[in-house]
Length: 349
Image (cartoon, rainbow, N blue to C red; front, side, top):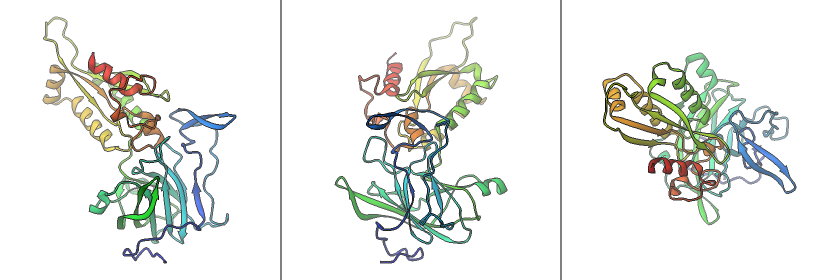
């Protein structure tokens, strides 16, 4: 059965014979992770902001090695998670997402880059291995796009795009679970542009580090906000904790303040929580009467990113243990779940 971008009423058959344009076989993002070579192959050791110092091997190939019309896909960057792209038509692509590391499930978040675009042409993208039975894409949600040329020429950031959007059960299954497809069509605004698609507005670990550095360097905010290290993640990344309160007045005897603990981003793919956290911190660190009153009355302990390893590697739900941290607050395994263990210990103190 042929599938045309204009014919939204036809559910595409999943292709098995079309040429693969992008295939990342490592299972982990080369840019963000380091690996040691062992007798049985490579295995994960740690993640690092800034990635590997050596060059990446090219993971993108043309249909016949000479095709200059095909889009060039990439996701080996922070929070990216595309595993495979298959060209099934001139402007038609099937995409497979990488599952959370050390699991065979949890595909909903996506973040990848395309280059070699043509303007005014209708492209069709279909993600073929989603696992949720229902989606907001069936109720009007659209994919996000970032165009480098739009950003440079018109100062436009991320925005929602796509037509003929459909989320449906595609007839495939994995480990006994039915798979679902998200499909959308789109015309790129510029020729030879570099564009990014994402499920929701990205908020990376690097973004958080820049945000915290700005707070620490601010002469006013740094007086009542101290950024410290709560612990190190399983991969060795710093998990920061912020202590926010008005400085004690030595000449006055004030009552003991109650503590308020706020955390975010236990699930890496829920980037909206980081944006909410940023808004919360902007208000709490501001100079409004409400913010000053809150700092006078309480001590705020804020952990803005509980799962930095998952964020860095592009996971949707899990940490590098392959487990959902939100289900392990009672764990006694400090070494396996350091972020939630230290957070719980802080609350108990």
